[in-house]
Amino acid sequence: MRADPWLPAARADVTLKAATVSMTEPGPVFRGHNITVRFGGLTAVDKVGVDVYAGEVTGLVGPNGAGKSTLFAALSGLIRPQEGTVWMNGAEITRLSAQQRARRGLARTFQHPEMFTGLTVRENLTIAYRSRFARRRLWTDLVTGGGLRRAPRAETEAIDRLAALVGLEPLLHRLPLGLPLGSCRLVELARSLATEPTVLLLDEPFSGLDGGETEQLVASLRRVIAEQHVGVLLVEHDVELVLGLSRRVSVLDFGQLIAEGTPAEIRQDPAVRAAYLGEEPAPAGRGGN
Ligand code: ADP
Ligand code: MG
Image 1 (tube, rainbow, N blue to C red):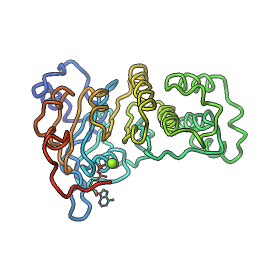
Image 2 (tube, protein in one colour):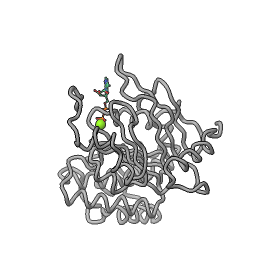
Image 3 (tube, rainbow, N blue to C red):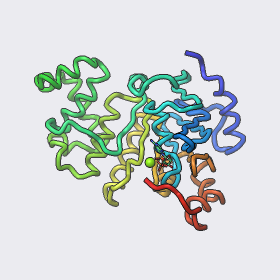
Image 4 (cartoon, rainbow, N blue to C red):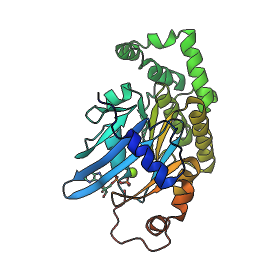
């Protein structure tokens, strides 16, 4: 693996442009550079770059059809971009599969999480936790069911800590089926953290949540970031939520990066206000999803 040749230049660039980060800060733990994804004649993501730093949230916002999920898929390894590179911890991972990226510490959550419905929340977390130690053991556990009941104390304690961090303790004994959506998202967050990732990619984790559930997930995310120092890319339609949680924000529109900066800068950006905050009528013909 080569070292990331852009790191020094990119930091200098960010420093000059946004004047918000000092040169002594460490470089990004994760970065997409010049990512382009085309679907036939449609350029869904057009030369977009994004940087994620340890212990911080980078927000990615944009109207429906802007290309957020497509960029997310390219970064997590689900689709291969036509152009661009993806870096993690200074090593290029562009050609690695989603699974290989996961093994290097890249976690993601799913908008429609699939949990093992016959297993309790604790057992679901245990499977995720064990997956980082022994991938083959995982499937033996699933088939026999027996392995899950013989949890060593260190493992039980790790799951307890994780549940406390995310705010899941009262739900550990429950089956996922029938849990409210907000609780499912917390389980999904805990499950993604069970592998102790360095980078966490979240695609619209707040969609469909009510006010209370949103507050709870915001609080959980804040604790996770503060205590585990994980770098987070938050892709989210709700711009106010993103501005509140993020250290820096990128704005996509029609596949293009139209603005980058601190939440305060993004609030003031005329292009963003026009394209996204609804100050002027949006162009007709925007694709929805
Ligand atoms: P967002 O997540 O910001 O709403 P998407 O990334 O889902 O946007 O979509 C970006 C654009 O790419 C849209 O015009 C969408 O219709 C198109 N698109 C997304 N996925 C595909 C696909 N698999 N095949 C063809 N077009 C797609
Ligand atoms: Mg989307």
